[in-house]
Length: 152
Length: 80
Image (cartoon, rainbow over all chains, first blue to last red; front, side, top):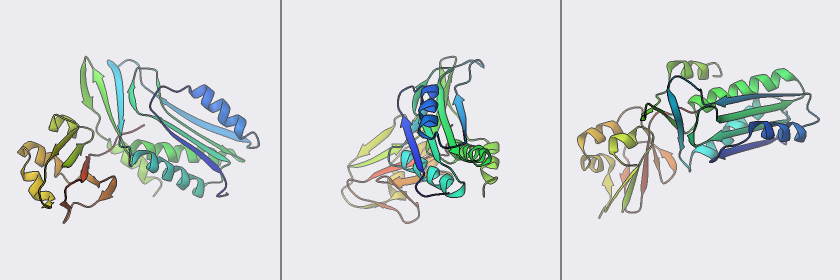
């Protein structure tokens, strides 16, 4: 573990290419033995024709950066990448990409899991989906808070 | 002017993402909420609603708004 490990944290206001992001991240951390990634995408089917995420400028990105620092302080990571969309997305479009590079794979796996649990229920985003032309806000689920409690 | 921002589902309750109005002298948050439609005031005063004054999180207790302030109402989050 080192405070010198770099975190790349970005709030994306337009679609991003997760494969390109991941390739660049892996190339940057060629010395790490493992790279673990998670990609969250808009679920197709279930009648949802669009998903929108809103953020609050003064809090959202600073909160994501604090989350990255917390993950780096907790596990021995060579690097950490967090890209999270805000805006309107179509089914199949990427919402969030988290990747961790580490000397040992277990640190990378657990750091990504930790970051995702916090992005879902402890970050400044509000989500709504459009079903049959009607927008409806998505309330946080009890499972999300249970997921968060794993790390307390 | 004082600006109120409504995030997430609060935007639907308010019918707008923000609301600005003149405030001649400092006013307690409770008094400002009294100026709003009761349905909106009730939604904004819920125990799960967090507040950010001029971009920084703040507690509702004892909060006073002055001219130029921007107060955001933040309902429970759902990201990822």
